[in-house]
Length: 232
Image (cartoon, rainbow, N blue to C red; front, side, top):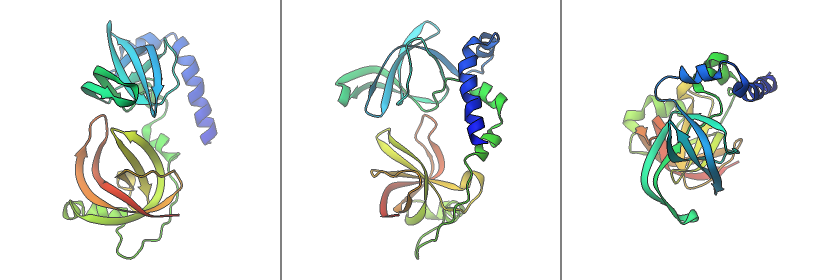
């Protein structure tokens, strides 16, 4: 079923530019959705830096590494602009650089029309069973007592379901432990260490609540200064 879904998406990506209604669809996108055309691009470390045109203006965006070609049309809505930012590994300073989180080849509203978000999420669900070490908290515990735990050091164990490296100078580790429901079933660990999906890790860190880091990175609860103290 999942393979069929991804094949369906590939077909959409190929067919969308040729669709007779694609221009009408783009014009109908709500405010806040940016439609840009690639002028030039290059990769450096974990990012792709892309010069784009939008409504006769030209600017630079940075996205997690992405294969693009000059002339491609891309879409995004969540970003954070940084002024006069120097990228050390490029030895280059950008007067303005947009760090984009949700870059896509498909308009976001079009994706919602194809398949509701709740159905897309079904493919990401899995049964996870993790034993909880003595003195640790479950993810459900942390969400339920977030105000009490705010600013305190906790220990939590879970399975890594996603890992994003070097976003805003941080590593983002997403874990589940089989507790919680819907948007309280996973927890984000911000760490200087790395992990890969499938790892079972025990982490110690500081609980922070209602954190908004910009470009779509906003969380009810997050563990900062995360240290992986055990890994399976």
